[in-house]
Image (cartoon, rainbow, N blue to C red; front, side, top):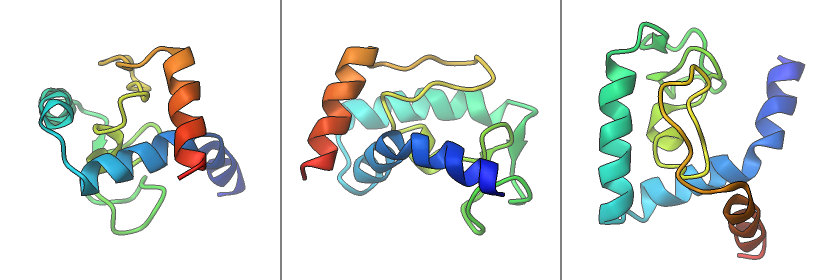
Length: 104
């Protein structure tokens, strides 16, 4: 569990981005999330029961990283850990976004 927490802490900017985008919906982000969701729903690694979710009660989640799909799919700087979809933002754009989110 400690390793999972440390990995999640490293991704806090991406997690916050996903949460923000889930709460404050924008059409272009919802379109990306919808396409990603189609891929995730057909993936055999999806965890629908919550056994592999980082946070209890956040299923469905990714069975690889444990992230809630609701937030993961809406984080433009996140990529699928199973290699099924890529991040939309570059590393530089991700750094800029993280800095922006930390200053909010």
